[in-house]
Image (cartoon, rainbow, N blue to C red):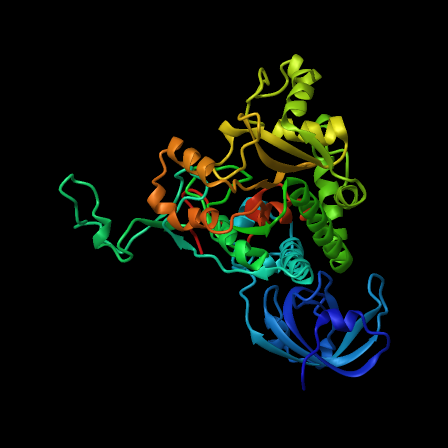
Length: 477
């Protein structure tokens, strides 16, 4: 008999004489009531065992974490909290679980403990909810771009270029570490390596995506990216996923329009399809907030925050205007910011971004026209020769969630910027070709997928929104 998902049984509109369900035991109490979950929904289904007619040996094996197959009838529940339950006629133990050794006992665990058991943490309500929301958001991203006629492009994970120019990349090599071939100057001879040149794990698929946008019109990438940045913070991962659309003939204004529409679409999509999970995460966040001192609490609940992004037009503010606001703000004047804003040209920190969103404008904010010195080489230089056509989208509770720009389409200026940064033009000959043959205005942005999942789930540590986090000194699982 084919088994039915718990989600479908709980959504049933009538009782059913014979059902089969498979899942994992969350709890078993009074030798009678099994709380069963199969991952399809946050809720458990109660399975009532006729313990007097069930072998003692079987009852002993119904433990937290055990995998079971249950047959019975779906009946109206006698107790509170659920509409239906299963009156069990047969229970089969598919996989035992030693109750004393199983780490995911039905009690509150610290997030740190759950990270140490990342292979089992989706057996909890919290991580089941987070990963279902992540899955739906991932699908929504593809659906949005596919509906708009974008072409999905898979850009290389192994690359010879550094799209950000920051140099914080993981090297890819097949050379033996004990007998690395050297040139006459004593440097590593990468000509002897697998690819015949120095290669790294990608930090971004943007440069390759740009070349495709310049023939296919509008494209997007959605794949893993890597940063060898030794940042052991709650906001950084060494391996994470990036969404990067690139659109030919879009200027910065059109780029901002696209980013705003895209973000609102995927959040709305998740809110419509993950109602139970988001309600649970909202309640969890509210309970967490109550533990904090009053001055550290967020002004909004999770669902309220998501609604806030959907209902408010994103406020568009130039970097120059933002600096003036921050310089004259109370926290800056009273030296409450960790990083005091003293002059134009400062690189904004999360505390500044959150002040603009949560305190000053009380809406999501798009900052644009940043100083060229603090932005990447591929961003279009403005006529003032000191700012570039860059934009960042700032959200409540999280700061920057999207970074993008109008790309520099003029060959001579791009070559000049590459030379100033000491980048070898030969390494980017293919990228420069798009400026040699039919160049045009084009724009794009990058959204760190985990930052989006962080925002939508209300979690505070990025390690908790990716299945197996990769961080400095940690490559477990």
